[in-house]
Length: 189
Image (cartoon, rainbow, N blue to C red):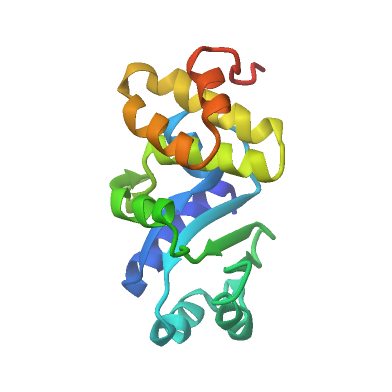
């Protein structure tokens, strides 16, 4: 199973659960920007405790997923994962936090069709901002390269007022301005 097949499989499973979710991380930046190989998938899931058993059951079989780990995700770092037993690829599930930006990302998620499957995905602007926040927490050329790829591909389509407003609130304005001015460029192969 490759990354694309895993994404389709996870989308089908998530859509069956009825939980509110969106794709984020590198696969979302691949959608909006310049694609690169990634070795995991990242989803944000709004997971009421009553839905824990349902999500575990939906992924059980082809994935190694532990119900105790899912239940522990209500505490920091608010994350659990499922390992695809067919490929050893990892799927990270993040619970949204009660921060204004997390609430806004969830509110702004968009419907798309990815490889024939209906999907919810974070907006290009929110992926850029999220990549800059992650780079601030753990500096990485990948995070900046992903963000630069989105800026390059989306060019004038990005809502610059929105990203500038949130960049200021998230303390990543300097990095955003470097992206928008072309000082940070996507990685070339």
